[in-house]
Every structure is written in C-alpha cells, then in structure tokens.
Length: 299
Ligand SMILES: [Zn+2]
Image (cartoon, rainbow, N blue to C red):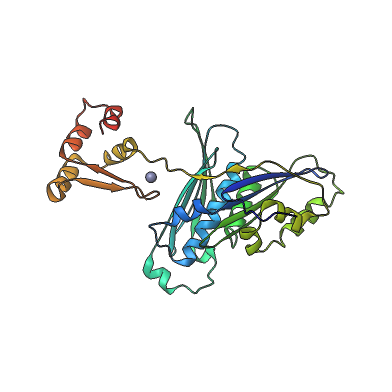
C-alpha cells in the first residue's frame, strides 16, 4: 500500500456490501486546532470537546437538508458546557465552558460523566430554509461521550449504532457503525463488525487514513469506501445576531455600559470575533424605527 499521505479534515462514508451496515470515519486536524486557538483549554476539557467535535461531524452526515446539528452537553460539574454545531456541509464550530478552580482539583483520568456531573445531552437539528427545529433531550447516561450518543440514537433513531472517539491536541477522530434495517436474525455480522470496531486504538483513529483504518479492522470484509468530503471551520455569528442578543438587556443598562466604557464590545465565544457598538449603534438598536436588517448592513 502506498498510503503515506494523511488526509486532513475529512469525513469518509463506507458501506459493508453483504451485511446491511454503514459506517463513517471523521478526522479533524487543522479545523480542530483552530477551534482550540485562543481558548487555552485544560487537557481534560480539550480531550472531551475534541470527541464531541468528531462526533458532531459523524452525526451531521445523516442530515438530508440544508441545516445544522448541534450537540450540547451540560451539567453541574467542573465541566459546565460543551456545545458543538456542525452543518450539513461539515462547517463546524464548538466551545467548552468550565470552572477553573474545580478543574484544578479533578484527578487526571476523570471520566466525562464525573466531569459534567448531573446534566443533560441535547441534540438540536435545525433546517435552514424553514427554520424548523427538532430537539431531543436525554439524561447523561454512560461513561463516555460515545455512550451518551449511542443511547440517544437508540431512542431517537431506533437504529443500533456504535461510536468510537478519540482526541488529542493535534487531532480529533471518530468511527461510527450503524445497523440498517433488513438484517437476518441469524446473521452475526453486526456483532462481528462492532467487535472488530471496538479494537480500534486512539492513535489509529487519530493517525491513520480512513483506508488504513478499514484495512486494519476489516480486511476480511467486503467494504466500499466512498469519496471523502471536507470539514471546515464555520462560525455562524453575525452582527445581526449579536444585535438581537443585545436587545435582551435594557436600554438603560446598555447606556450605562456606554457611559462607563465608551462602547459595548461583544466577543463571539466560538471564533473570537469582536463586535463593537457605540452610543449611536445602541441608540439605533433601541429605536423602534430601525429594522434589524438595517443595522447589519451599516458597518
Ligand atoms: Zn463567531
């Protein structure tokens, strides 16, 4: 094999020809590193956020319309929130929030369930055109991001799914296996294929190409690997959205901040972009005559 070139920021779909099982492999490199820039995440936070990022790409591959899928895990533990959004064209963004003092006290190998504490996993699917939203909420059950998601998928999709995730500073990667309807009852392919899948090591998921991973796991099976698609960083923040958010504070509060600081500055948590509003902007936001669309095009 002459598979020396590592594929960066790609998602691959594959299909087992005989048993009705489909799969995906996601690999994020530059996109994942970009997401960590300016955040300085503690290692343990980075690890789990990377897993959610890799998973969000795997789950988004089933979107059949223009839109996005958001995975949000939140709890009352040291890690308070992870939210990752991935669009149907694999534009992805994500952020984690945590309590630094609480993180300093957790042991090095703490599992994600302990880190999040009591909480929920929310999956939101939004269709861009109609703005229709589907939202599923489940308790955090299991000891890993993969188990949280497998539990969610078993309930919502009624499809048996196995997910394997890994992440480090350089890369994030995931493998998904899903049993499609129409399996013979006496067919043990699902057990065999998921068992082989479970032998994948983190360094293989992060370091090997999709073809190498499939060869390593399934060289005795008949697997069809499709052309990959690219993953890229995409933040959906805009001046218009920030303006709408500013409306949630009172005009008085906004004016007080302007008086004190000269302007209101809002940083996007996902991409770090800064949106500045001066006294005239704020006057416009709270004046009834100004439409939100006017505000977004003034600058
Ligand atoms: Zn942004």
